[in-house]
Image: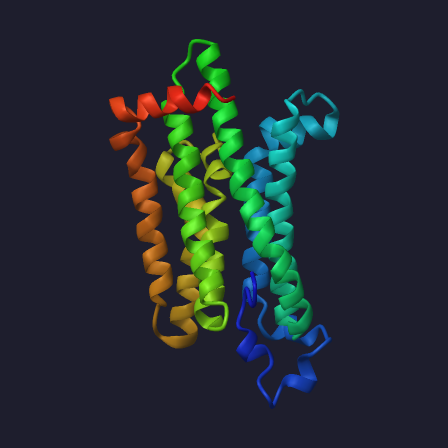
Length: 251
């Protein structure tokens, strides 16, 4: 998020700089990424509504403080992502860059909280006599994939066409937990399609606009496939069981 979650270069093209800066027309010109950002928020709300947002609204939610911190940080990320998209679309590049500096630190905080929450929830499951290896592995896998694409987005922050797509993939990674909780979808494959739907839509948008699909999206889908398959391969090994026991002693 250090520069553009959408095409800053397009937003400040010389012939359109004056027309788009500071006006809503920039959003109307390129509404796709704004729409995808809103879709991400919708997926998060729908996925966590039965177990978190719904009980929170009616006042029946009972969760440890860390879970509330985790939810606040992750929802805040989606809000920050949407804000950056809108700022870039409206040509507010200076504000986008300023907020992007905050976004780098926020992303680091998100990873730390995500890992701590995974360790805490795993320790709780083990205390109840339930297995926790898969839960902890999923938390580490999610944060690892997010960190790779988030770090790459920072590294390519001066190349907006690459940066914006890396940020989209990183943000989509965080939707895996929400999509997996959509029990009203009977098939796991349907939940996985919901999870990666922002990337699938972005690929379709690229193909329609440019007649080519950007390789970042292809790499992202490949990384998501590895993430989805890896728990069944590694989480049940003796090595990961030992790592889980060691990490949960700190919870």
